[in-house]
Amino acid sequence: MTYVIGANCVDVKDLTCVTECPVDCIFEGDRMLYIHPEQCVDCGACEPVCPVEAIYHVDDLPADWLWHLDAAAEATAGREEVEPVPDPPTVLALPARPANG
Amino acid sequence: MSESRLLTIAGSAADPPLSARDFRSDQEVRWCPGCGDYAILAAVQGFLPELGLRRENIVFVSGIGCSSRFPYYLDTYGMHSIHGRAPAIATGLAVSRPDLSVWVVTGDGDALSIGGNHLIHALRRNVNLKILLFNNRIYGLTKGQYSPTSETGKITKSTPAGSLDHPFNPVSLALGAEAGFVARTIDSDRKHLTSVLRAAAAHEGTALVEIYQNCNIFNDGAFEQLKTPGVRDDFVLRLEHGAPMRYGPDGARTVVRDPGGGLRPGGPDDVAVTHDAQTSDPVPAFALSRLPEAGGPTPIGVFRSVRRPAYDRLVVEQGERALAERGPGSVADLLGGDAWTVPEPQPRVGGGPA
Image (tube, rainbow over all chains, first blue to last red; front, side, top):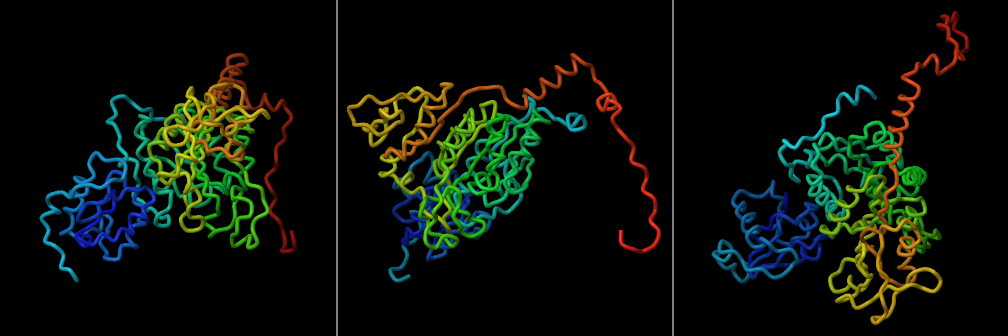
């Protein structure tokens, strides 16, 4: 099980969740953040601190955000320590968030 | 007892391998968001498949406290038992069912305050138990009073001017109680935690594992120095049996013998003491447990791993020996005629006081 960060994070990256995570499993891409699905311990610390409500438990993830679980798995695959990661093509393809959006 | 033995279901090589998912129960996990217990739960669920045992042959017994909710969340047998008494209940189970893998989950309040006696006697007996002591240095479930491991001067709701108590060091305490296996690890270091669980599980006898666990609500950051990248290397000594005790960035710092008999931090050019977890003398492990008091780093890993006969095995062997020497015997013979029969109570007449 894991928490998943969805599209609301794209071009926002508030980063509060990163400081909140007790096991340091949130990785930063250029456009959004990714929770390592194998490292997440389901503690839920990240979800309430997200200012744009981008974080859901995988069981509660809106249907149109389900693909973000795959994107997170792809972005964090084989990584152990937190480090910058490249965004997967699915995320790169998202339209840019409007400047005041 | 004979009935429970009949119910024993042994693991089999033909069993399909289990995964962490198999050890998750259907219960909603209820700790505060961000609690260190989640990380420990995930590590334990990830480790249990390594035991190669069927889930019904594994038992987790807990006492009272936040950590003691653990058995609900594991799809094994479990018991959320009495405050401080988990080691006693687990002792009975391990002795009567030596075929089971028996684990105790407890906290610093449960194990070291109300349960202090049960803990030390389980350790001296060397019952085949694996005791996971979650130490967050606070009473979390009752909302933030100082615990037996809170540092002196701790300001809490119950000690507004600072606690006056000197804290227990659980590793020192366990070594004083003759524990054969004593280790320490940290909730958020999954690799290290898993390696310590592996070593504890392989040890026959009581294994005490102290797990530094963050209570992010009532004692947040208690172990931050030991966790923060870039800082932790100066404060943590990672124990490895047979390796020189060095710490700091690139292992530049050393642990050396103190003329007084203990250990202390040394200079970079000093010869570091080699860690021997298997020596029968508990003194080196005890000295290691006091290293932070001498201005040194906090050791994590296996302090002591020494085999001695396990209590449950001794009990079974003693029973078998007695059976072989004296035969099955009978209860009547055992009582030797010194017994009497309690008569059926007579019905009372009238409504007066008894």
